[in-house]
Length: 530
Image (cartoon, rainbow, N blue to C red; front, side):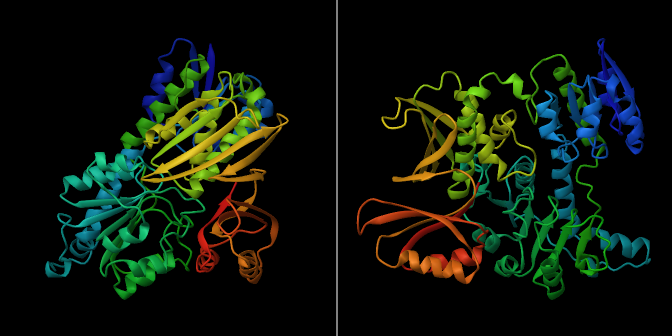
């Protein structure tokens, strides 16, 4: 008999599923998360714990949880769970990925309609002010308008389908999904954000909050938009600069906006500019708040916990007990290398398809290498935990495909992993190996040879091999207080094209990159963090 502890409120449907199992005993106390000492006292009895965000599952709890086999998170995020500590102890962590996608999608459509038809303002005018001002609430129609969707994952794509039903023209920008995913749904795939910003009448964001997306819609981006544009954020607070949005609403550049998420929640700091902005609909982060969504989440996590306890396949695992992966130990350096290649490649050139060339005998570790590569590929673009357990599922959900090609051993290094990204007619490749079966190395970028440890911060650039280039680059970096820690150069031949890698100690922002791009000798430049 397995004992399951539920410390926070979840929908009854999930509890019922657990109670129906003859080999599971459930203890459900929805207020127990408020008494952490009590949880620590009783956790030694339990094989599984199901939480939301209020129960910290860290070292203190895990030290006492001698029987614990699985931690279930009734939601997507797992910020309150120490994933690494669970993995070390052989404890599986599962979540309810996708359980609230429909809820967030429908809220987006509701906010869109509420905004364009001024529904909240009209409601207040009639009910609270007892006024009948029809002309004051003249709206616009969705039909015929162009909707720009930034982020075309599980929610963005669903918004696109529904917008098409409203007879909207739908365009999307998401460099991390294949073009064909959008085109299959009748949505136009846009290759750069600037074009979407210029063309869309209504813009909605559905991306995770990452280094790349934080503040991605600011004053500069809003200035590129049409006059009278409508902006929605039902995704993550911080993606849209709140000060810039409030300013644009006051000036009339942005006709209206709808926001469900904030950089700080609740947003009642007197300094939050959205609270006093005109023509804006604000809601208290209710994207996942539907009865159906909460039921979905509870059912998914209950089924995952049951499967995990019985040793059956688990679809939404976010980690894996290390000892369960028999191949991992002997191939650990290659797993680390494959992950680094994925991280590198996604920052240089996100692809519509990917090829992994495995040179040499990887003796049944091919799938492990693939999942590690996908982990690196996805980690930079998602704000949910990605592991070698769930990376294949997350990639499939986003339409990302990897083709494995086995080749003869490399004549110099033996085992080599080459990762190739294909985007249209553009192809970019990076290859690495492991030295002395311990030390991962990047040995080739494109056609150029290197010897790089795959961790740290890199400035990658391609240039004409003429005197003075390195000096000019060094001058620009020095001017911006960016320290150079190392330098490697690869070239085809004297006077021809060269590729260089600068190892730097500091982040390089877009302003510095633009300055570097302005040099006549530079044909390509990217900043990469691994």
